Length: 452
Image (tube, rainbow, N blue to C red; front, top):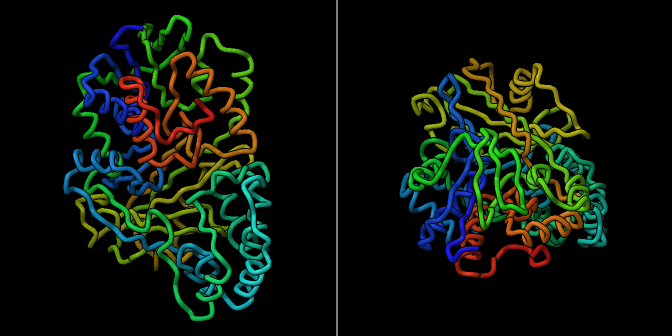
């Protein structure tokens, strides 16, 4: 390795761009970023459909655990962002229950409310050694698990909860003390402020991808687009491109899905390949419906545990920014971005799906009346959630140390394959930390120590 190692970064999403930006800030110039698409953003991308509606590749909101991400956002967007207070609800029968469901049982009809609070009182308490199905029952009891947790989580993960671990929960799920839930129910008080995204930011124009488009412009002299990776040779330290060209590296930072990375390795032990086969993910069909109807709904996003509603979440996308509808005219248009997860356990057909989603938005009381549909748009995010299965950690404990021993850093949402550190701010932070590790030998701050 030279004194100034050659760094090749794969992927111009939040992690890859975060790494590139930090390398430049540290004065390290010997790097190249290769992106297979013709635009930056990765999983945090956005698209404008032919009718002029903007859609993200999923229900993203911007909030942060890290000062480095805050600085990046300020540098790229300045004051061209909106600040929102979360207003999210769960559709339960004909009721809108403030999020989180388990904190706001007072909005349920009497019988399910009684079942939920009784189950919560009697629940023995779960621990991270249990599978997700057992953890839900032990933590929330039968009522909340039956009415919300189990059906909703199957719709999100498209994976049976018995196949999932529970050690990823952390701040992702509100674990409420029964006394707090009982107080809310008895005194008829809402308890809706829980969670790190209670306040969130959103770009004024361009959707979530605008952050990364602008960042990529600042780094454009060292970013190469339409460079698809064909193979990686960890012994020769080369990356072969689909166009027949080759790049050499001393350090490789990969943000592609780690199972895809392993499949592209020219040389690696069979144990690494077998471990990669144990990793599971789902996909999400993002179905956007634009209406020629004024924006009236004050909700940010809504959750739908019911089986007869195809989507698990609907985002009131025009509320995030008026620029998400044609001519920024929310006096004329509104838009709802829905998400439908799929997997081998939960297949979903695209045929007639947009029409089914539109009908369901009206049937669920999201949109009222019969407004004219101005747009129907579908995006297929084939890699949406890295599923924290029971086999995940053991697989990563085989794959990641081998990669790092060969100077390959697999980071980002799907590079790490750890949902619990899979937000945009986590991805950017992972990229920054990897750059610091390469240049300054500074230990990574959020990377699991058992993967080193």
